Length: 83
Image (cartoon, rainbow, N blue to C red; front, side):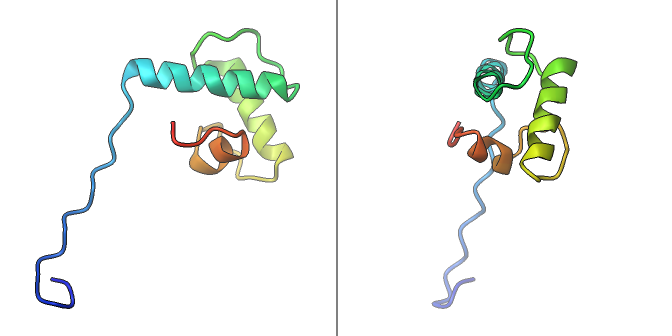
């Protein structure tokens, strides 16, 4: 309940991206990494070993936790927001 006694609103569920949305996000990340000089063999929309290595290198160079994941901080620093 909130301060006036009304029930608190239910938390908004985070929607998982569809397969198509995820592939597009990966393509966007690949393009952003390539534009910054990181080695990407091609823009294929797959989070393959080469893309993960480039992502990890970017995170290390940016002094972020090195996870190889497309986390919010990494996406924002690549200029990818609200995707």
